[in-house]
Image (cartoon, rainbow, N blue to C red):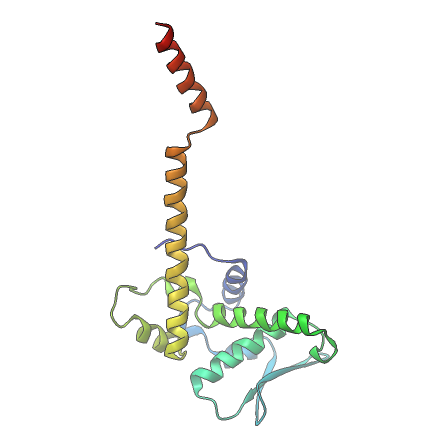
Length: 188
């Protein structure tokens, strides 16, 4: 299955490689946080992060399932790794941009493609297998699977279009050669 990953996925792959995270079972939020000197705390408020000088913490909302907690962790980790400044002093548009980026970081970090590609996408249990292996909610695994399948279909559609375009619209050199051959036949 051919899949072209995004720059954000390249970032996640390099990040995991640096931490020696090679398989889904290696994606352990506590270990990731520890290696980055980030504390994980729990509180009764929505999940967020704190960064005060060298002190960094991900504050996870209490009462979440383990799978939801994992997704919240990756969202907040995206903020800590990729953003700076306090959202209290930012324009709404910039806050929205940071949230969009953190959501995408979560999407790629929770289930990175370079680990997904070893799964059997034809299996009738693929969503359950992905959900269980990556420890994410089934709805999240299904959304990520749909995304990957869409991107692979998009890639193949692009290849088909490129092939069609080249056969219907030959290169300029080919057009000139065809015209020359036509005129030579006419003059014979």
